[in-house]
Image 1: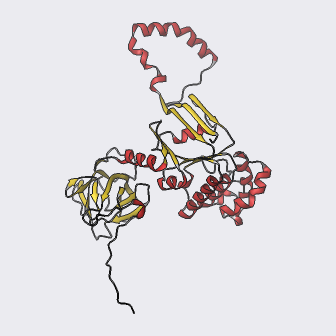
Image 2: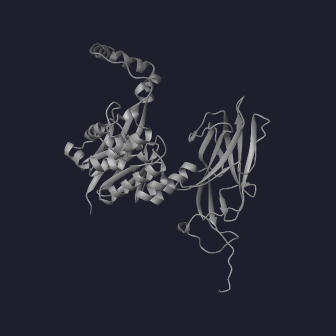
Image 3: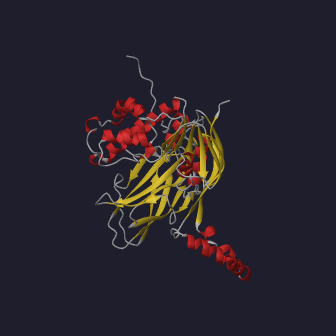
Length: 426
């Protein structure tokens, strides 16, 4: 049996929200003690005031009663929506903040990649910042010198090592910062969403580095919204929801549970209060539906037609718009981006609100769960008016009229039926 690397029992963290409390001097403390009996009498006279203590109304639990155990050498993904408590958990395990209640036992040297680039000084050169940042992250000078060439080669900024980092591009800055942090040699590595930065090539390189760390037998806790990366890197996962531990276990089971709870809408979504969106708001999606034979549904067979309907609201003076519908797999892999321009459609807007539909004919996706995102932008610039991510979910449940054989999800993404022909030998 492997030894325990991390054990959390009843872990909780509470934060105060609202205005910062006024600084209390000694005289305030003494005055408070003198008036305490009168406050008690006031509560007896007016019981309703007893529950209005600011401690109860102005605090929020970022984590509440979280308990789990991680063995040495395990690679665990931590997933959940924004505000679920993922980063708070890693900050407690990194000893950046103390828990309000509960305990966290950590056995081994901890390395943290929580905020890449923390501690970089813009006036110092890349070379100087490697030593500075390495020291902040807990590396000894001899360790930094031993790994210096490897760090520089990984960051691909050799010719700029003696240039102040304030002159670096954002990509160069992030590559160097990640290179320093990724070359730590702790027994436990905590990683928080560092793969969300940089270009595609850099993200692949970061993921490859994380895989190497995992293969070396170190314990890794990996926080990410990229479900494909979590599924690739982590055999097990922990799901946090509303500051509490919702599920833990095999990564495919936990990721499926997360995706289901994050996108369940029975094919009909009210988007007016949707939080997973961004844009200027000059035009917005108000609702969306997914239909099968004009009936709201989430379940389809291969070869069916999927009809997506949505309502738009425009602000006064909003310019002309262009639209797109995106489809992703359940683990976040983009499948297609369908635009009105490619279909030679142009919205002729006449009212403040419009209703549109997109019909995707003869869908050839393998059985599984898929997510739809809606995009709305300007025709004359790169400005995004509204982008609602993963607002609808649909399932391909079987082969339908096209086939009776079993179709495993592992077989691929697209179900194709090309023309087969037996040719005469030459």
